[in-house]
Image (cartoon, rainbow, N blue to C red):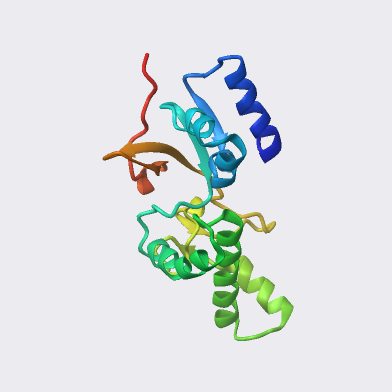
Length: 186
């Protein structure tokens, strides 16, 4: 499921009938802090942290890109002030949009809508650029002639325990991987 409510129902139902598939693909919403609140800590951990459970995401605070680490460091005071334990994807996507708008305005040197639109359509932002903060667009943010984003893929992540602490690790794409995929036991 892609929606939070139906996802919570699915996870509760799976547990109620004892169905725990070896491989389980979920959306990142179902492993968010609000999912843990809705399911309760014990059930939330049971359903999302099993080996073989992976989920998609546009953004990961663990991304090895230096500009992502810089963005997270700059956003941390705001997160703490608002009481957010993680950067929500909507906030990050908005920040990515603002960074691109700033870049376009600087390149265009104009506020003419036609010039701005043309500049956006021709914009190429490689993943090495400081304005590139959403790893799901690797290796570059750019657009098709019809305006559709190129390279719009998901990261795949998995909860993993290291040294007694749980954290989310990027398992795909290989170029941004922070850990290997943990397969479920046979």
